[in-house]
Length: 177
Image (cartoon, rainbow, N blue to C red; front, side):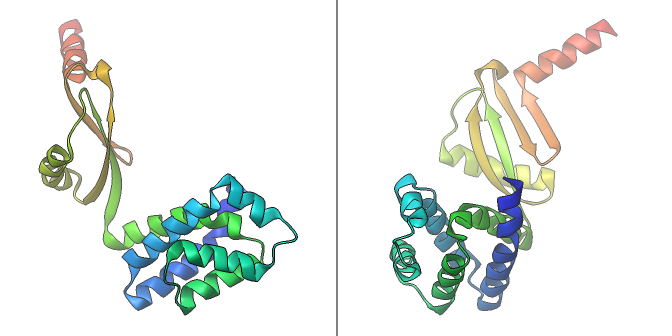
């Protein structure tokens, strides 16, 4: 797996530089996500590995997945097909997203909640969490019923524990001391 990421890195960096120069970070993000989904399909993987399928056909297949293909996208697909790197598209997309978030000052975060949260609830709490963590956040939500109530928010190596389980554990430590 590390080898694939190593192979994907120069392509992701090149696409990121192109997207930044074009002012099209979001557009390239969408394109790469579509391409990664296509490359991750098992049937498409079989077509990629088929020696009877020409590079031009692979480029057409992937271009069709993105809808309207411009010169930059076509050139990327031709280069990846020529170098037998189409299977690296999921890693390229992942690395690109990392570069894009760093450029935008956005970090990924995870909210563990005792109960499911609606999109509106996540939107309401996001500004306060962004103040606390001092960055823009791209939050995902997971349910962990063992929290009893409240939430635990993790961003990178920082954790904000506002759960009932966390408060009970803190009380237990305080009572022991």
